[in-house]
Image 1: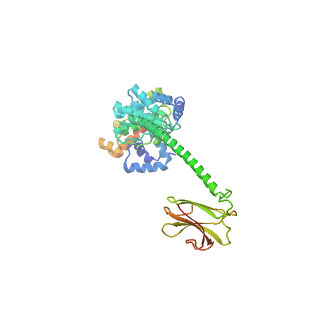
Image 2: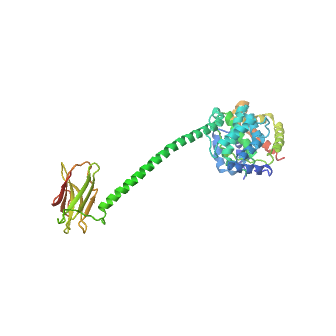
Image 3: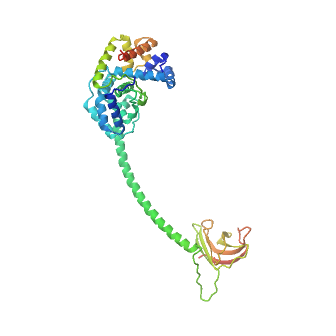
Length: 182
Length: 260
């Protein structure tokens, strides 16, 4: 956990260091590298291209304003941006203030899932894993992840007990983790 | 360090922002002191990132890149925008960059205008200070010439007249300023002192300072404490005992002069 891909991680770290010095071209490079995943996640959550663009802009502006928030020793920038994006998009969807400061979002992630080629490969594996999940489990996970529903809202929506919802979400996330340990 | 199993489910919900109420509060408190659970939370966020990779969709439009590059070019590093509390505010975040830029431009122009005014003020103040410094220098030279112990004080009288005690009082009523210079005063007997009095047109004499002449019979009194606005009828110097009250003249008058 927490490894850094030798090909992309180092380059990301160097670009983040460059951003700290106000290097705009470094920002452009990171945008080119990660804007597809940021935009895709924001659009998946919000379902609106204008709103997704706003989140895309906001996430990269957060990085520009506060590059020190990303801890490169803990994981990949791509993974961090993906989680920040998902959280920001949910905040926008639920019309609420951002729940987390970006500094507070610490991530540990398997080293494989960075770089365009890797992401495509990982994406396929993850979709396959989702396909093997029982429907209620995948549904609970997706309601929490893409719609930002709380466990009690999910319970109300599905008519299932709170404890069951908790168990399903936990199991769903651990299933994703196992994608890399098998 | 491993995570506490009993917090596993709550941690998953918390990572997703789906935990609420007392459970959330209790977990946040536990996280403060449990490194194992913090590690597990970071790993769960990693799982969330993994899920993000499964999302497929179109690439962002080209204009989005230009919008970002324009925004970072206009925003100095280290400046943060306030968080919005509604979707509308959220959607305006991009616009906030423009508003901030416009505000900064406005501030720059305003500052430039203020700077111009300040520069004028500084120039005016500079002239004033220069003038006052010059006035002060002149005043100091006048004062030194009159009051310095080493200044030669020469009283010119009619030829062949023996030197007589003389005093000159310069009095500015509105500002209660008084400078008194005396010459040719006879040496004082022990335990005696000269005292200057301001005699107003109405009311009791006002004490205006004790003094003793130097070896040449010269003495000065500079700005003794006086009430302002008193019109002086006469200035008188009396010879007084050194000790005791000096609130009212008791001794003999040595010299006197009426104000013009």
